[in-house]
Length: 465
Ligand SMILES: NC(=O)C1=CN([C@@H]2O[C@H](COP(=O)(O)OP(=O)(O)OC[C@H]3O[C@@H](n4cnc5c(N)ncnc54)[C@H](O)[C@@H]3O)[C@@H](O)[C@H]2O)[C@@H](O)CC1
Ligand SMILES: Nc1ncnc2c1ncn2[C@@H]1O[C@H](COP(=O)(O)OP(=O)(O)O)[C@@H](O)[C@H]1O
Ligand SMILES: [K+]
Image 1: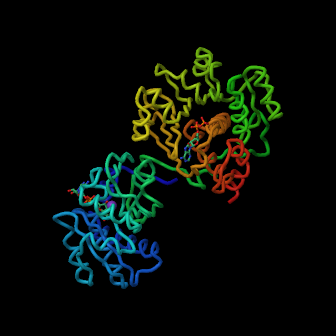
Image 2: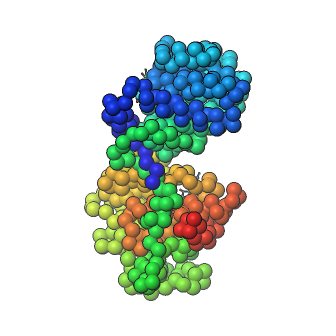
Image 3: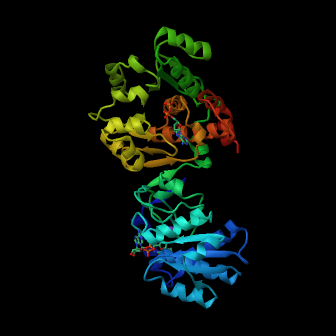
């Protein structure tokens, strides 16, 4: 699991570790890791022209001491001071090894710019001179390595209310910060490289599944399994308006871990579902979970869906089904899968507000509806009512295609029917959905059905690395 902590958690962990170590040890650990990452990024240190953008705090200190290490290995290091004060000892050390203080004019000729403007102590946004320096680097195509976080982003929310750095690499220390995982800030980080500085950290605020977590969570069948014990999913999706959604959601569920799917819907749609997937049973019977809503259109029967919500079996609510969600009850077993527009309608706010503050609104909805909420988008944010948050950011943008959400709904429904919690079902579903999309796409266009068709191979590759 990749774990991200809040600034407050990081500060507390740093304080307790620093109390046990000689002064400056943590900054030297950070700077050493940073210098190695920068020379790996450049492919060399000797002869490289490195410009450090230096703010007033310890983030600038990290950059200056990394500059010292690079200068010792033959780099030409120039510090551009963007504040009246800079980390004094760091600056002295840089000057002592032949580094110099320069001006923004040095940026255009640099091989790399190191963003040491602000770190976890920064307020969102950049002052005009910092913003101008960053723009210079961008306009001359000079790559930027961010120290700890891209300066200007909101570290604890991933929001970007003002100008900020867009990094080609971010080198962070001790643990990931929330802005590394949550968009829009996550997209401004580039790849994130974590340097261990020995922090002892509490439970994470935000998590992100890795391959090993998928292997640990996946309900793999065993010798005693039969099609019922593996889980049966009830699928209430599609309509004469949108028959395709039922076919696609079924394909998503078939790519999941369960033994059987019962389809419930208009006869004409059931016929199309069976024609596409002869495995599907259109006979009512016991199910372990429901997937409700993809393409229901005018077929949505709110009282019928609310009855399912009140029953014991977990329910995934997608698309039109979301209209049946209310804030009156305990929805512990419910997984809602809105995109930003649907979540905006549920919460009575603008879509742009949800997009700018994704973590906040996913959490808000989980609390208000007492349900697990999976907010779709380039990064998927999953918030549980107990405060757990998981994020998935490994999907190709080619996945933004009609019907992709129906595949996800069917797949997450399958994980619910296999007995996973709403949080695990949602995070496994989002992970495998993205993995299948990446496999099917190979950097080219994909259709929703091709994503569903790639689920078995993506699963196989993950389960047998
Ligand atoms: N605390 C520690 O033990 C460690 C901290 N480290 C580094 O220290 C950083 C945190 O250092 P600080 O707490 O000094 O904070 P920062 O270096 O993030 O800077 C905060 C200072 O910058 C100014 N500032 C805030 N927002 C600004 C803005 N938008 N534009 C311009 N100036 C702004 C404020 O005056 C504030 O004092 C971490 O991100 C990390 O890089 C590492 O060396 C590891 C150890
Ligand atoms: N830019 C993007 N990059 C990666 N994945 C994306 C992007 N935009 C959307 N997605 C994913 O594609 C799927 C689209 O689902 P949805 O919006 O419900 O579409 P539809 O209703 O047509 O099925 C979601 O899983 C979402 O997370
Ligand atoms: K920074």
